[in-house]
Image 1 (spheres, rainbow, N blue to C red):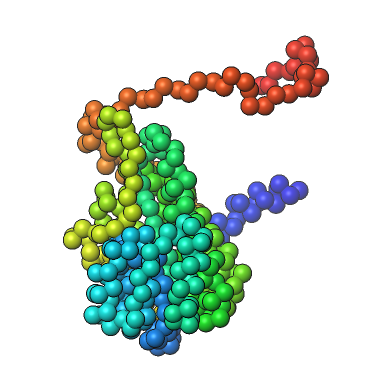
Image 2: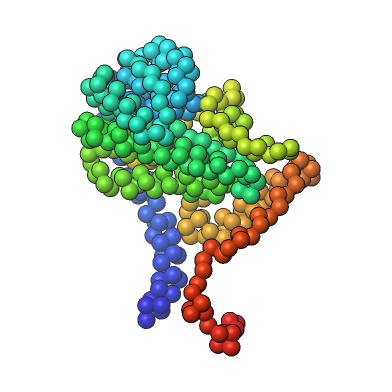
Length: 358
C-alpha cells in the first residue's frame, strides 16, 4: 500500500507544486519586495560595531572589508600572510573604518581561531559580525589529480576554515546578537565540471550553516551568500594540475582579481554586506541562477541535457589541443597482496550450493 501511495504522490505532487508556485509567484514577489523595503529602512547601523573578516587578503575578502569600512565599522582583518593586510588596512581607514586590527592566523587551526577571537574581544570588548571568506578552488578533472594529498587540504580550507572560526566566535556573537556571514558558491548545488571537490566542500559548508541556523535560533543571524563567476585570476585563484611533465599539483589562495573583473567582485561584496546589514538569510548574485535550481528539483534530466550540450560545444574546439598536452595515463594500481576483507572458511558456501544471479 505504501508503494502505491508513494507512486501516486510522485505523479501528482511535482506538477501540482509547479502550478501552485506559478499562481503564488506574484504574491511571493510582492511580499519579498515589502520585506526588503522594511529591512532596508531598519538595517543595522555598523558604526562602532566590530567585524572579523577571515581571508581578508583575497579579492572578495578585501572588497568586503572596504564595504564595512564605508559603514564606519571597526575591522579585524585575518589572513595567513600578515604583510598583505597592511595596505588593505590603510585603504579601509581612508574609506571610513574606525580602528583596524591586522591578525595573522591560519583558520584551519582551531588554536589560531581561538586566539584571533580572544584578541578581538580583549581589544574591542565585543564581536558583532564574523565574515568567513576563506576559499580555495581548483581547475582539474577528478581523475587528473595525480596527488591526493591535495584533497584534505582543500576540504580543510573550504569547510573547517569556516567551522573553526564560527565555533570560537559563537559565544560572543550570542552575547551581542551578532551575525555569521558565509561566502559560499553556486557550485554547492549547481554541478560544474573540473570543480568536483570544491563543489562538495561548498555543499558541506551550506548544509552546516543551514543546520546551525536552527540551532542558534534568533540569538545569532546567519547569512549565506552564494555567487556565480565573479571574476578573478584563474591561475591565482585556483589550485591547478600542471599539464605535461610530472603533472605536479599546485595551489594558491584566492587573491587579487584581474582588473577587468574588479567591478563584479565589488558588486558581489556590496550585495553581501548590504544583505548582512539588512538581516537577510540569503544573498545571491546573480539571482537568475535560481532558475537552474528549479530545473534540478523538478526536471533534472533537462538540466543534465543542457549541461552536456553546452559543455560539449565549449570543449569541441580545444579537444585536439588538450589531448596533445594531456599527460599519459598512469598505470592502474597493483591489487593488494591480501584481500581487504577475509571471511571465515565456515561461512563460505560450497560451490554446489551457490546460485547464479540472473
